[in-house]
Image (tube, rainbow, N blue to C red; front, side, top):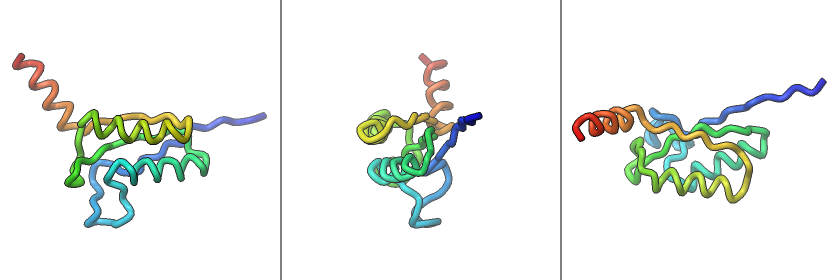
Length: 98
């Protein structure tokens, strides 16, 4: 019997910074590179967090688009986008004020 698994990879997360570890990817190119390396090892789901130019969590669609496009050009791995919680809170708050 063949067993199938979902193997999730989260290259960045919300907390790690370059100051904590030089190995955490913070720009789109670094994130794409690590996802592609993980895909070669059998990972089939990428849980993505994006960072802005200062290395801080961001919800900017342009940054997510660059990451997703970079992954899609090279592999069929499924990228799961998870925006930072404070971005969701800001969005909900601005919707209420509209």
